[in-house]
Length: 130
Image (tube, rainbow, N blue to C red; front, side, top):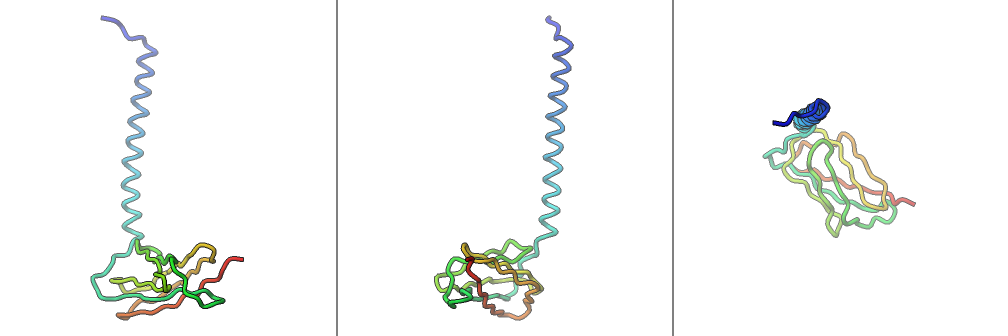
């Protein structure tokens, strides 16, 4: 039987140790991500509360198609149709921050948007980047 040289044993031990640490780091990161996700996301309600609206150009008043509307702190993201209209269904009552964005336009942040009634209507005007 051949003897394994001492330096080879050391190298194998170091490789094993590094692989073990790598596994522990990845396992720990998964738990942290789950905690962050559960803390930052608001639940989507079964209730019939909705938010509708229209996104227009600030200067011309034309409807803006393809604008993205996001409710901060949730996974909710919708886009406007060809007439600039959007609709978000089944949301929980509460205060939300909303971000509306479209390429070549400045983003619009609406803070403390209160959602409480069955139907909520919003008109968002975006300013073109010049």
